[in-house]
Length: 127
Figure 1 (cartoon, helix red, strand yellow):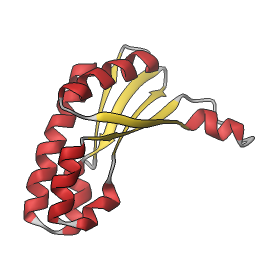
Figure 2 (cartoon, helix red, strand yellow):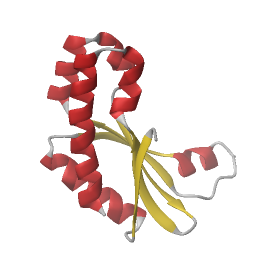
Figure 3 (tube, rainbow, N blue to C red):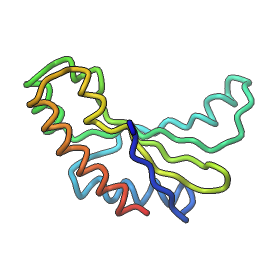
């Protein structure tokens, strides 16, 4: 699987708040939150499902990984999503290890695996 997704009984806003707190513990910050439902409706398109994308970054990790291989910048910042699916709130992300596998660099894969595990912990703590 290319993603890591969990289900929570929290509302979207509660899940985002909890996720932001757990991300802080791992020195990740939310650069911005993109509300897809709001944006599509602003453009006159029908979309009634709550779906938010969070762009998250740990500046030290970003610097470290970009020093190794600038192509990894194509995958930065990390994306996390919080959305409703059939009445359930879900929190997920594409796995960094899967994204950087396209770069074919073992050092980068190891760094991405470490970041992935930390982000998964953040998600798990937010449930």
